[in-house]
Amino acid sequence: MLSALALFLRTELEPLLSGKLSDNPIASQLLQELDEIELASQSSLQPSRRSLVLPQPKHRNASCTFQSETDRAPPPKPPIAIDFTLTDSVLAKIQQLANRHDDTHICWLTVFIGAALVHGLKLLVLSDASAPLDAPIRVLNDLDRAIVVAGASGQQLEWIYKVRELVESSFSPALSVPEQPKNTPVDVIPELSDLEFPVKTYAVDDMDMVRFLTMVQDTSSSVPFIIQGAISFWSALTTRKWADLEYLRSAVGHHRLVPVELGARYTDSDWSQQLMPFGDYLDQLIYPSQCANPPEVGYLAQHNLFTQASRLKRDFSLPDYTQIETGRRAVPEDSVAGSDGVLVNAWLGPRGTVSPLHFDKYDNVFAQVVGYKYLRFYAPGETENVYPFPPGSALCNTSQVDVNEPDLQRFALFSQARYLECYLGPGDLLYLPVCSSHTTHSHTRYALEKHRQH
Image 1: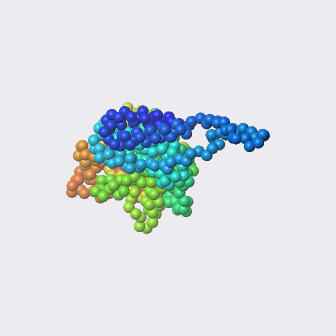
Image 2: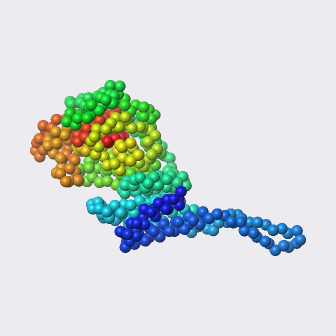
Image 3: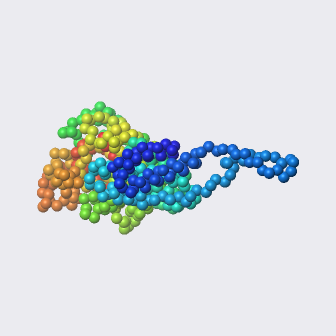
């Protein structure tokens, strides 16, 4: 398998490193590392040979003996040297070109994916007891960056899964995390105020596929609605797996890098985003949120966590409603590979996490798994009244209005905007029409939900 990966990497990287990026020193360094791995891999796969050893007889009954090369002590491996400044340099180049989105930027994304796999391969082929203790974690972190930052897909993603599995099984002691007693947040039903304009709710037995299609087909008349009981059979719910944060730590992996939003809402000036180990996210921002004075809000939002943590896929299945074709598909094809044409994202955060009023250019099926959340919806016809940021800006799908504390002097028409609202609890499934502006607010100490966008 490792030789097949080396061949794949050479096929992927050589056209770039000997062509468009041939003058860059990173290119020659990466090819040199790949040569080193292939040489070591080939030598380790040489067939054993038997050699005849004829000792000098000391007496008449002395006999000849055969000694296999496999009986001899293998030559010591050289100390492993993985130059992580290589991937750091490629990341810096990607950030430098982040706003270009041209062929050069795409080339560097491919190079980073290749470099991450080269380091994983090098760790597996050349490593021994001399490997630095943090080498497996750093390799796994770069494999995560290859997914989250560089957007690995197709065969790249398949190789990342295979290398990750081998690294995790080969270096499990270095990746272990000491167990500590934790108090998982209790899923308490919050005090919910009455709703003035509630969304309609249907039982799953009253919502067959024909009725669902009829209700969502015409965008001019479709509105949000809730289906109760549609996901009640998910093991994430029946066994309450996802309500157990330590189960999530085990399923995702303590060291897995995930993107976390820091700050109350992404429209605030002090909002930021960073990659951090999933276990650190739980320990630093989810568990402490139960305290009287919780830390800053940290939100794992709109992330395809299941691409990284395939074990979680065993706990749910796509609702049949996601397979209805409306003819409005706007999700990029390469973002839904292997998911039956559906983009699946996860949101996980403590009480107080907010998504500002915004719209998506595709239909949503929203599944609430843990916790309670308030949502408010404005139809596409209300766009003028909710004051989106100007076209062409990075936030052109987002309202300038703070729904909880609207500045009616600046946004006078907002007081005329009509809306629907709802609370979602564990097991609720919500349909959200394309281009319907919505805002969310978590009402419990810990909430986890999934969106299916199609």
